[in-house]
Image 1 (cartoon, rainbow, N blue to C red):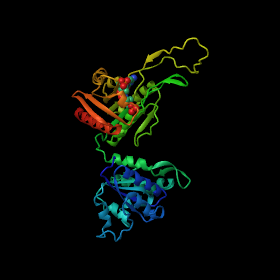
Image 2: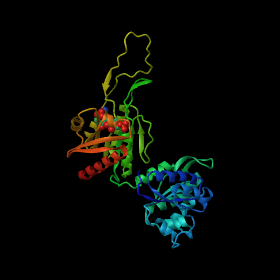
Image 3: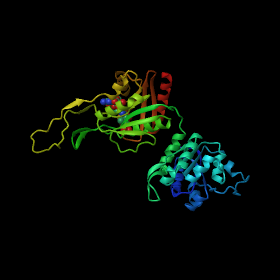
Image 4: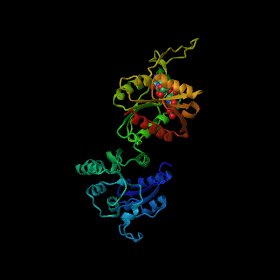
Length: 398
Ligand code: PMT
């Protein structure tokens, strides 16, 4: 429940994406938020208030003069206790109203009279989004501190394709969750590695491991939520890239090594979560190995891969380096010895049975001040605690 206790006023304006706002209400409530829906008149032509009432469990408002509000000051009453006003979808017309401070219906009045952050998820036709008037309005809104979510690019209801699609409801919820996180790493650049590597033996076979990428992706998301600019060098996994994170996909340890060196110069923090293969086949074959009646099984010669983390830590002006250690026994001893041999200030130790593949984990952080156990939790919750610790260490480095 990422939004437990949060009170969200959801404004819905007129556009075909209004139907997706119904799913958005459902997802917000599933995360523990209470949702008060306010619709523009145009929105009621796309979806009826009854749908939102059923999903939110609250009466829906769209009329500025609604007699249900005792004082007739609905615009103030509705947003008085809200933590956030979220408008999704936000039409081009509504963005224009917001940018110019117009207040000629309930939702625009509520936005002008609000005392809480405003997030908008634009949704419109490609040409409307690219129109100079909309560009100006969006720039004005950004300057006013309004958070613009998306839009995405893709097929549009009008049959065209391009920028202007509303973000998917799950993406909007993720952005809202991020919005509420403390900005521990604001202005910082974080580089991460995540997932396994795949070392080719021949065109169809290789050496890899069971890392799913979940721990690394959770840290990328948590760092982004904390306000960092995040680059994620990822081995082959089947996870969606966290919103706002730049992903650099790689396959082998050598590719991961090259990608890290391309991006590390700008980084304030480097977090090595990847389970990098220590060795790779010395001579990967370009043709598939044939079983072909050989009397003896073939031998594969291996050579050592570069240690990406140790190399980054040895740079003349290294970022704050954070390692991971997955062990099957003697966790404290092995993790601490990796921290010392790689000369890094912080390492997160986890047991293989806890760490690999699942959604939860248990970590012990080792640094110069000793051990800090983080009890079992979801990988995202642990990632947020790790980000908090990284933020503290960065502060001390100043
Ligand atoms: O991906 P998940 O399924 O969520 O699983 C997460 C995880 C268990 C893979 C993760 O939590 C974890 O522990 N990752 C490190 C795995 C490990 O034991 O790495 P290592 O002992 O081989 O390496 C120690 C550190 O050096 C790691 O930070 C590793 O990224 C880094 N390293 C290792 C070898 C190498 N050639 N280059 C490196 O950068």
